[in-house]
Length: 615
Image (spheres, rainbow, N blue to C red):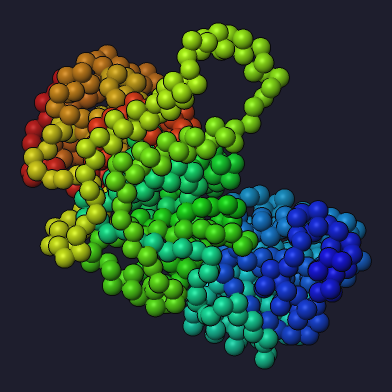
């Protein structure tokens, strides 16, 4: 007998979830479903993301609601569009063998008229984000006067995102006698306040200790100098060839900088941050869910509500300020009983913050040494060997080529063939990591090393080593109003001037103009490449730039909003570089482990304005 039947779930629902692969209930499901099926209690459930909470409240709702009636009987509030759609699809799948079950997803970024039409046709379960739900309520387009159950899912995240007032307004339209079920990963004061305000003697269920992390997650940290942070990050990624991860940054600009640097270095990555339109966000998330992206670089806010299965690693490029945020970050991996790794890349001054997070989670972090170049080469080599073992052979398609292949290798022994095959990739790894330096920061010297490095690290990826600049800063009369972001402009510059993207330094896109840096030796090549160039019928102008004069001569500061122009079209629409250049290594790159990444911090290289020389 299926264990879900023993919990009180009826056969048609159990048959549906069995087809979805549900065999045994998770701990949160096993303990919450019998309580919720009574329909007589308010409920507070504390459990990490990825533990099966949707089924824990979704299955009881399908048992308790009257699907002969077509009015709203259950309201589920959640923080993000992605989670809203996920919950809606899950409940529809649970109910696929039932009749007349209508579930509507209500969220921003989609047509409100379509959502209103679905509500008007009749609905029993509404899954919503607070902002769009309040909009529909204010239009008097929905009646919650007969709602029996309200579910607040990921309550702590909704409060972190500033939805307190919206939640209060929405719940004020529901009847007093309803039952409220609250699910949260952590229990900060604000969540406790909601429980007190809207619940009467709730049944509390805590899986593990309050505010603790998932026991299936390993927590590791690496100590590096700030200037080596990006190089260390790449080496960690290279040491995990099958990584499928989320990389968390503190700011939108840092997120964009790192994603673009990774793409330029040949990694399959993209960014997710608040400046992206909904269409751009959807495009990035689709690529990530389809595993066409290996690394998703995100801010805390942008990543909230993401539920993607089989994430192997969470990397904290910058540590969060709050323990609760770390819990949510790390909870993106090790979902549904699987294991995962949460990695933090820190400087010596941040050890205190690691200890604080350890105390909050009740779990010890493991200090790990950054792998050597030899370690990375060895790991990558055996990753290739394992792929050979597991590759699926399309017998029908390959058969016609086998005679020619065998003829080509007929004079080569098995041992010689294996050595040559392995060397195709191994030689490239050896060349890239030849003379790779030790990137581990000595603890006893950490504070001295970090004193001067932290400023640049906080502003950007901060990997340049200082000293006299080897780059010339150039002005170009194209910018975000021409629908360029930094990735687009990089490609345009390289195509026009025939230089490698690896040599281009900092790119700063403004409104009607931009700046970019190239090595001194490439200046003439770049200017020659743009001679007589035009963009959509307009001449393109390249000039050597001083910081001050270029801005004053190109439209002033009225179009500028900080160092990063808010008019830009975003990082997800036009960039194709990451799709064309798959894998962890750029096949053309060579040199040390630093990989040629330069300072993207926004730090000015000129001490004072100087006149531009026009070509």
